[in-house]
Amino acid sequence: MKSRSHEEALAELYRGDPAFALEVLNSILADGDQAELLIALRHMTEAFGGVQAVAEQAQLNPTQLYRTLSPQGNPGLSSLAAILRAMGLRLAVEALPTSPTSA
Image 1 (cartoon, rainbow, N blue to C red):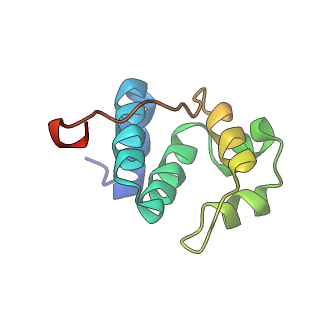
Image 2: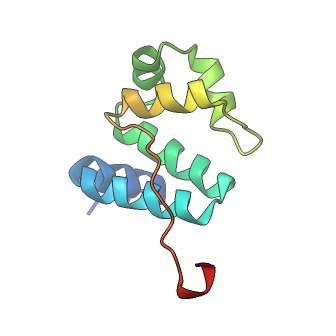
């Protein structure tokens, strides 16, 4: 049996189950952890053909995509939207659930 890296296994999982990938991203966005979001997007980039393919679809320079998704990355809204669109996803806004004490 051939050994795979954690990143390869995640990419395969996201590629095989896009609904799971969507669930992961939504969960991360709900928590608001930017570092975790960038890690997940790096893994998903591999699932969607690699940096070169996603950069081309997002109309970004591959170097720009690497920097955007790096641990020090701070993607702008337009870059994030383009990256997600290249993966067949989009950002959406939804109302927060109201609690009985917030009324």
